[in-house]
Length: 247
Image (cartoon, rainbow, N blue to C red; front, top):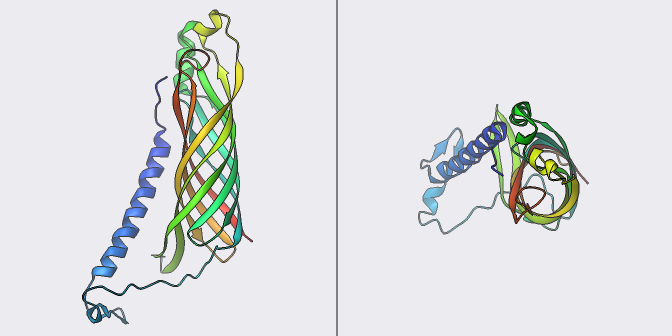
């Protein structure tokens, strides 16, 4: 089953990558810039030319030993023949500023896209087999290596950049196409194992409220023709935005 990317998700990923690169570049530029005074703030790098002293930035917003409740919504690229949206409530707990664990439940809304409808219009036998993800649940380990701040319209915005990995289960409908239906193969629902990798940002609006940007890719193994045949790995991607409340 050939996969086609969702151009909206790809565009959002490019924008997220551009933000990440700009933040990293700005950090390096600030660390490397010489001079005694810039905009009223002194640069004391001349005191440590060998850069043996590291400066630790104080955290204004902390998450260690706290619970984060989040609700995310977004776009999903689950199948070449479906347009999909996702609703994703989450519960996270951070053991430290760098490590945490999160559980999530994702429910998907799917509808036939133009590619599938075009194939339908050519005849019953042209309809392909489809794997349609209905929902998934899983647990993610959070690693948060970067805490940073950027100036947005003269307002300082603090955020964490995190990476996630985990495992879970999903329920998916195995929908037979025209040829499979002609062979008498009926639609079934299967429980599959999903393996997750992702990354995202936590933008801290206050000590209790966050805005999230999250990207997650899920790999799962299913029959090659969705209903029969040798099993192979497929993938599903989601790009989400959400709000979080920290207890």
